[in-house]
Image 1 (cartoon, rainbow over the protein chains, first blue to last red):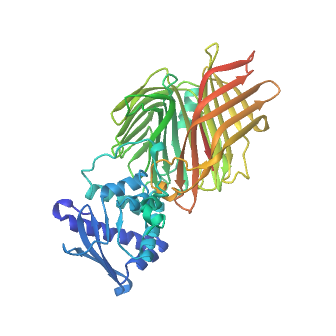
Image 2 (cartoon, chains in turn brown, orange):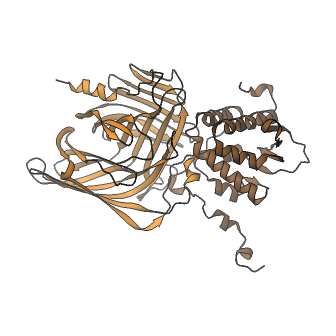
Length: 180
Length: 355
């Protein structure tokens, strides 16, 4: 059953979309599901999208149970991004690497967990155009979450910077040159 | 006898048997258009591809617009450099979106019709602030290959209209480009059952004018597998003033691609594949040469690549991808088709190297 934005808070909308995403991953892609379990099982995190914060956690009840609620203002954010950034990545105007490097994707996590999140995101991107459930979820996200969206600025493909060296460029010169 | 209008109808007829509940999901059927303005050298490619069947299937539409640098959003235009704008999107193919008699697809900012061989195509992409409307009809000899050829693990059939009269306009950001009678336009069709990943092709269309202002067009197609260890027989169609004048097949055609010495990251069409393939460093195609000769005639063509973009297509059933390099630029043709040797005065090409 779909969600009606008029009858819910933004937090409830985000929880609904996250639960749908977990459901799609659980039933459609075994590899992504194993990554999802490794990232979330017996852990908790605060996710922020467009300044809307929700708290998520997962436990092994009935195999796997995903629980999400509105986050408290004082809770620390572990992952933050904006709908505009997600749209840019899906349109190919930014890459995941570049978004992480320029802070559009903010992640506070262990290296192992960050790596698994990266793998899961790449896995979902590789399926994004051909998996009907992911396509439907994306269309629902645009409709429910980002209905009043502005067009992305059209720029030429020649200007598309894939940002493969973006992480290196983020390192302060004093660190990369070993002066501290 | 098959009249040309009947042949056009056969070619444009939608081929996927999607009303059959057992219709396989590896069916593909696409409508491909190329438009070129000889004055401004603006060129447009649009493709709409139906994949599978309503429900699990999807519709892919792709747009490339190549213009002189600065043409879209700068006050100063640099005619020596070119830039390409474009999008690629995949949308759900839902039951009821497509009717086939006459052909009419309406959904997701696309209104695509072919009625009595006349095209009407209205497309909008609100995400990238792009919109266009093309209206047109074929003017050249249609070539239709109704016998599907073996292709990958399946088959492919196709048809070509090397001359198409179009009018309309395209809007990119706040710039509007008008398509008028003096544009060269091309249309082809491909349909069949195959998976992306284990197939490929070399294709181009060339439009030239010789020193006596005769219009020439050339269309080449050769199929291959993804690593080029298997190649089909090439076929080269030659048109004089929109009439089919000559066909070269098989060993009479030689194709050569020259590659850059250095490696670089190719521009990738916007889409979710950009993040997946952002770190490849590859050599890029620089020039295509084609030489065709039989007992009667010869053609020599040299195509200098000025724009290179790439489209990466994932397969819905297998973890495999096909890489389509979109190339365009200027061409020189020397030939003796007809009664005498002719040289091209001006000309352009649009090519795809796919693997």
